[in-house]
Amino acid sequence: MKMKYRKFVLGILILVVASFGLAGGCSNNSNNNIPPEIRAIFDKPLYDGGIWGLRVTDLETGKVLINLKPDYHFFIGSVRKVFSVGELLNEIGAGHEFVTPVYTQGDVGEGGVLDGDLILVASGDLTMGGRTLPNGQIAISDFDHNEADSLGNAELTSPNPLQGYIALAQQVADAGITQVDDVVIDDRLFVPYEFREEFDIRPIFVNDDCVDLIINPTTPGMPASVDWRPMSAALGVDNELETSAAGTDYTLELDPELPQCIGTPGCTAAITGDLPVDFIPPLTNSFPLIQTFRIVEPQNYARTVFIEALEDAGVTVLADTVAENPVGKLPPRDSYSEQDLVTTLVSLPYGDYAKLILKVSYNIGADTSLILYGLTQGVDNMDDALAIERDQLINIHGIPGDKFLFFDGSGGGNTFATNPAVTKWLTIMTESSGFDALFDGLPILAVDGSLAFVTDFQSDPTLAGATGQVRAKTGTYADGSTGELILKGQALGGYIDAKSGRRLVFEMAINEIPIASIEELLQVFQDQGTISAILWRDY
Image 1 (cartoon, helix red, strand yellow):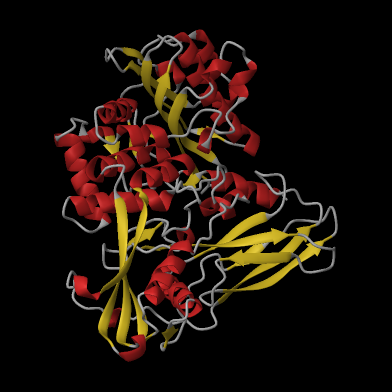
Image 2 (spheres, rainbow, N blue to C red):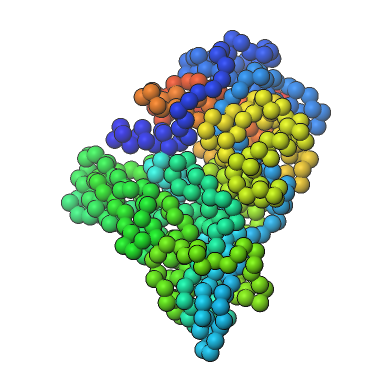
């Protein structure tokens, strides 16, 4: 059980193996204008030797109300996402819809037989209809399945993750096509980007590139119940997980978490170990327990599920259902003709995707957003997108280049920024076209997203009114490389609609503290929530 709790802690954090920053602690404050209640939090034993920073400004007047350690290079983690998401919102607009077309390559003859292939051209649509609720809104849970393995559990959303592929297949059938030679995914929109040394992000997605395992105990000594979604020949699941007696160790393992065989016939991965009948799943405290295999070859997986959907719709595909995506059959880029267009899938507005990325801190979505931002600037890869973003932040928005350093779109690597750099961007966004969607997408204190569980402040009647009045992005980095878990950075940045009527722009961070337990980690979240509530009350 200790191993699983450590994995739970590590999963909440984004692990890094190198540190960056200046030496010093709370005694080296840039000013002493810190309210006593906030200073009391800073001075807790948990934060001995830690480095706190806090900047608060009045949005209307621009007055700086608190400015603690303005020059310190804080690890900000996923707070970085307010830049990448905000930039794309400003370029394409919250209402932008991604259109994924399907074309024929060849002639459609008698009886609807296509002498050639169907080509699905990936558009960067993050969900492909797999999170769309019946009312047209996006489905989001507070415990997202993208982090199920590291957090130990998740809550699945209700829509069919293959909904878009099924709709496209039915529309192909409705167009009168009855048979095709092969199916090809055109994933050339941008250069694939290696995500955290796990797999390449491409502009095609199936269920956020996850295969969800839905796990329940049965009777001790019998196999546990394991279902999965999407159910596809692209990846089979071998269930070797046994329900064990009460009080035994929880030893569930995925072998492998990153199946490299996707695209080859008979590709399988196994779930093994023991699941105690009295096990209490983390986060939800109830079954089902959710774990995931990562779809490391999304272009191959997408091809298979689209073929399966076509077959279910009555369209015969002559090629093998499971195979490598045959990119050699693709025509030159941008050579598609309107007369060969069969159908399209129109996405939810990007504003909804911004909400998904920010509420649950969806790393793959943020990285994809930065690459899509690069496309609006004429480049098609992560490195060039980062270079253009950096140039614009410095030369157009006036954020000094020595005050921030980003390595991707999501806050990975040694991402750092000073608190003034973050609050300046947050202030710039308030005058930008994408602000409403960014503001709407941020987690809300004690209400939703990564701030839903932050409620300790409510025990103080003078602070309880801050519920729902703080919208901010969380960000976490840690280093576990030495065997001791060090919280390198925990940041929180966003907006407070204060009791006074002011709108405050703020960023706070704590760097360089050891973490001994999950309770200590969660306490950092709670303490930052309390600080934001004090700011709501007193400013």
